[in-house]
Image (cartoon, rainbow, N blue to C red; front, side, top):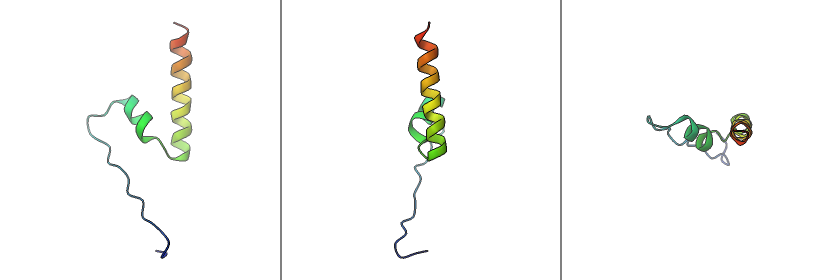
Length: 50
């Protein structure tokens, strides 16, 4: 490990979390953040047309 490296300490995901919370709060890395954005856009568009 480099002298400048800081270890990443991930936040534990609770057992009783909803899918919405999981996507909104824990999908923060690059690829999962793109998935989160797609989920949010899709849900906004689907529920907007009802």
